[in-house]
Each structure stands twice: as C-alpha cells, then as structure tokens.
Image (cartoon, rainbow, N blue to C red; front, side, top):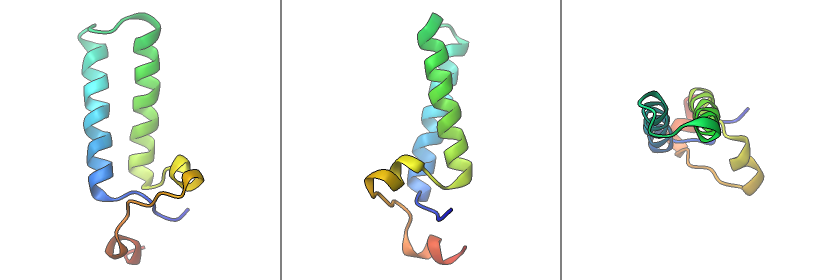
Length: 72
C-alpha cells in the first residue's frame, strides 16, 4: 500500500471521529444513525492509522506531500 493521505487529511479525519463519538456518547443522535456514524468513524480511524484510503485510489486523489512519501 502506498501512502495517499497527508497530515492535514489525517487530522481532519481524527477530529471527525472524535465528533462522531461524542455525538453518540452524549446521545445527540440515537438508533441506526448512531451506529452508522460510529461505523464511518471506525473506517476513518483505520484509514488514518494506515495512511491509506482505498476511495482515494479509486478517484485518483493523493493528499500526501512528496516529503511524506519519501519517508516510507
């Protein structure tokens, strides 16, 4: 797997994960929507740790800078 996520993209995803988790924890969203948000949050968290997003590969997006790619 080749890196295709930059630091800014990872930070945004992590903030979204925290936001979704807080919405679910404080019961701002309930039921099925809560489970959907937690599912999306878990996918975002996984892709952030892997520095790889399969969807980016399909649509040809690469937010990783040249410096970050050379560190592999």
